[in-house]
Amino acid sequence: MHGDQSPIPTREELIESARELAPTLQERSKKAAELRRIPDETIEDFHRLGFFKVVQPKRFGGYEMDPSIIFDLQLELGRGCASSAWVYGVLNVHSWQLALFAPEAQDEVWGEDPKTLISSSYMPVAKTEWVDGGVKLSGRWSFSSGCDACQWGFLGGFVPNEEGKPPDMRTFLVPRADYEIIDNWYVSGLRGSGSKDVVVDGAFVPDHRMHKFSDGFRQQSPGNEINPSPVYKYPFGQIHVRSVSTPAVGAAFGALDSYVDFMKNKVSQATGGKAKESFTNSMVAAEATAVLDREVLTLRRNFEEMAGYLQRGEKIPLDRRVHFRNDSARAVRVSTEVVQQLFIACGARAAFEDHPINRHFQDIHTIRLHHANSPDTPGSNMGGVLFGQKSTDFFI
Image (cartoon, rainbow, N blue to C red; front, side, top):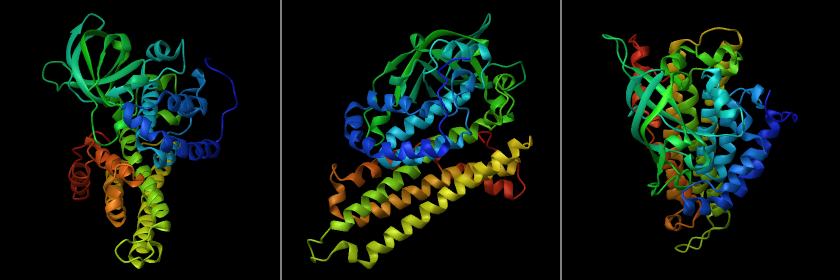
């Protein structure tokens, strides 16, 4: 057993801690944007509050909670700073995925320091060559969020398979000494996420530091032997897509908070009327509240349903996984539409960079650009499945 033996906080205590931290993250958001990465003190706060332990195995001092806690925390953190919520979520998904790797890989990362963090870029751009005991890995990957705070990286790519069989998609676990970070993250939204490029030139990756996407899809990974809890039986795709969609919902709540605060005191320079007495402004606030509420209820229902199957030792039906995947992307589309309505209703003042809703507007549109957050592919796939076609999406 590694790590400290301090009492495990309850789910409610963790969520309350995130709620209390959100205003501090909002104050730091300007610094995060200037640094183009999450400030060190925010990473330290996440460690101090136990946020990075939530899905880490107990044998390394983690809390081994249901991964839905990640997304409840992202909702609260995202109200203050979407970049912070984004980095928090994706780094925790990596902790969850490491628990699926062979025990030897888990010990290499967490054996000396259980606080060690992992970044990623799952883009399948690796150049691989089989060598004795593993593969030789090279390539350049983009969008490695939070990489400055991490000592290891997950990188995506295919490896050649037996003749006649399609190549195998894998995640490669690489130590910091084997890759270079390219500081090219100059963007308009999610500036604090530090999603820079990483380059690998001929690094050796042993067999135990690889995880097959097919194992994650089938919910049968090497790490499940030593980490048998239902916590680690979720399909990998369901966990990953939610980590990049939930910050959009958090950002939308943050935009709604900013809208309400602004409208309480706004007086129209054109008419002299009080914004809070406007029927239109009131309806925008009410509709945004109702729409976001429905998205959260849907996303929580999905996790509760998956947890029920796993706790009973049953497989999650494929058609339900397709449905959940579509809901994840849909939440981003709906949240983006909400923020656009709030932004426009604020009037011309919202265009200024220092207006609080402007940051949420920029962040959520950048979140929407992530490949996993496009609603078209999961939507068309779900429609096809409803029509009796086979699923064409394996990231479910």
